[in-house]
Amino acid sequence: MGGEVLRITDTAVFIDVGGKRDALFPAYELELLEGGTAQRGDELPIYINGYIDGGQLLDGSLAKGLASRDWLKAQASLEENETTEIIIIGHNKGGVIATFGRLEGFVPNSHIPNLGYGDQRQSAKARMEGERISAKVVEVVQERQRLILSITEAQKEERQAKLRTLAKGDVLTGRVVNLAKFGAFVDLGNDLTGLIHISQIAHHYVGHPSEVVTVGEELEVEIHKISYEKERIGLSRKALLPSPWAEFAETHKPGDLLEVTIRNTTDFGAFAAVNDIITGLIHVSEYPTWTSDSHAFREGDVVLVAIKSIDPDRERVGLSLKQVTYDEEMAWLQKNREAESAAADEIAAIEVPDAEMAVDTTEVVPVSPVTDASEAEVTETAEAETAETAEVEATATEAVEETAEAEVETAVVENEVVAEATSTEAVEETVEVEAVETVEMAEEVDETTAVAEPV
Image (cartoon, rainbow, N blue to C red; front, side, top):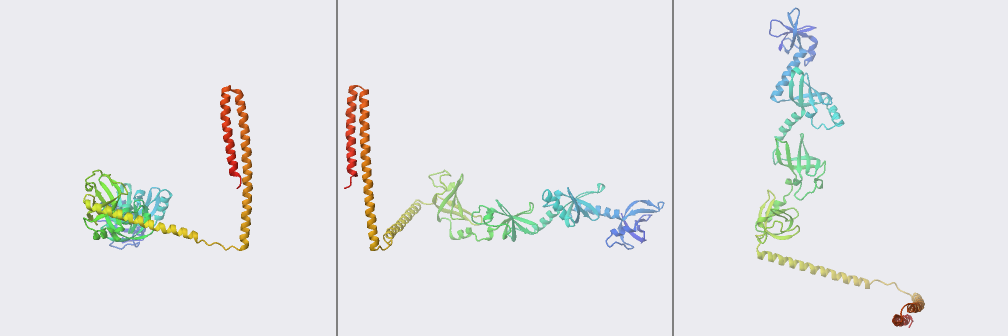
């Protein structure tokens, strides 16, 4: 309850609580008030503990009265989902302790954002002491002196308010804070973070975000999509870059013929590269009449197609094979053959001068001038080398003759042994055979000797 200040003495403050009896509380409790004092007529909250002075006065407490008022405020804040400011005064393993007015509330770890884990968590909570932070009341049980607060819920509401100020198409400046294989996270300020999906980084194919952007880099991005309920912001970097699709739409129209390269096939058709950036789809229904197999083409095949549709906003190009006429395809094939033939002729024309140049270079290699003295030295050296060669050849001839004679003698001895060990008929055949061999070997020796003798 509350009452009006009647008078203040050195030891007590008397309050009119609207009953037959007045209440009083110790004067030192005035220090709990803002400014540390009060005036006659001020309204102050007071908690009645009982009776004093034989029941003539009510024993009151300003401290408990102020606390009771704060409990009422906490309950109202819970019911109205209001955000209030708290001061962190301590921490423990389960969370942090904070003041709510003159009450002490508790913020569990699960209601503290970006807390981390292990020792990092405890250090983060210690650094929070003394900070004024926005929080929401999530539970009030006055009887058990239980007041639970949440910083996360308050920040969520603040983010929602900030998110509501953004819309699709807005252009913002942010800083890249993290890279993942699926995209880049960008800090937009005001506790807001957005994601540039890898498909929105550039118009060309990007294997990993690090190929284009780096952590710490400042980027200008456009809001590609936004979800207020899920608190997600989809960003696009390529939306602010010149669009190759718009340029393609300006220079091409449905019916134009294109030479494309098959990139991959699916059950519903084939994707074909129009250029380094733009890829179109040949739906299976646009295949030529001679096939209904969606995998009839292979990666790397070059084909002639007609443009069926262009949608630069959705970045789509529809292609058709069956809309290409027979005459158009034959003309395209003939043109390719002529181009290949011209290329082959050009290569041949380049190779012939190269060969001639190599020959000419060999012929014009300069030779150092030779004096008469050096010519004589060269002649003497050549004669000496000829003599040495003749000696070597003679020695080789003698070695061949000796080897041949030794082989003949060995053959004769072996023939005699065989003749004695076999029948007369076998001996005669063996002698005849070996005699022939001996003659042939002798002839070979003579021929060798004749070749080895110097002319």
